[in-house]
Image (cartoon, rainbow, N blue to C red; front, side, top):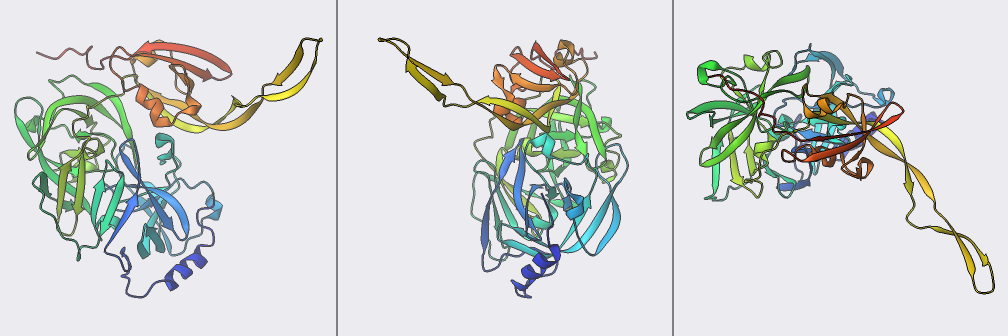
Length: 451
């Protein structure tokens, strides 16, 4: 796919289509007070359509990023941008800063919202790519540049955004809502709330991170009681940040309190100190609140007034689940699948005798290109590792269902079932087809707590 075909021409046409009343470097809604945008919700993450210089792409909407970043460039020869300078970006992970190109004067369109002078940061590191993890094309990530110009409603249940012009928006009375003050650092929003690990409630300051699929990340701090010393946990891969992989411990805490809203038995991750060394430089930050919690509410996010309003939705009482298998699965490339055509074809018929007629049918097949779901990581000592599964195994069938008929997240959901649930896998390892079976386990049962 050519991402930036005839960029100069399309940008010029876009500029001519709008008046000079548009501010430089900000989004505007021409002749509208509000705009409604449908999104995909995959693994708790919001994927929105974004048009850049006339090319339609898909971006992750993430309050945890201050700069729009473009990645997943499949054809770099077609990328032509002007006003470019080289910079280095730093994020979560234990690796080094990432080289990027910063480009200005780009035309962005999200729904009916338009920005005629948008900065964008282009990263060519192929390891920074959400598409294999989500199973749908994702070309970039955007946050602050959308939220700074609008009051943004996020309806997780109905899967839509509403962008409101702040000067025309009127808040409605809501008895079942809670409103929180936001503070900002590097254009990222922070909220204050309480967590209960044992019996004591601990006040914490957390980054509001719609781009995180997890519920809660806490930075270990013995002085505040934010520690796994007296809790069951297991070591796990938590994800990938801009500067590399993030590892840490996963556990469950007693509860969290967002004013009157209380959630119990909440999943929590404690990232290791190396992965978050950059994030810990932010004064008083204790972690992040992610979309596994945020999706239980409908949100009104108002950066200009520094506040966020929450209202419970139908997800509020949903249980928290873990990947109990130890398998980290991604969509990596494709495979050729032989499929039976539904309709058989009449080949010939004839009279075999005076009383009988022979009819011949031919079963037809077709070969189709389907996504390949590949194991990219296996948790040490997990039931999957003990069963004999290995990295690079391609899963062909899970519990009797061909995986090419399922979406990536549907396959992953099998690993989040209750302890004791049987998982049967057929995998391709090199040129060999192999079968495996294991039962999902309670991931905390084997650790003994210190006395």
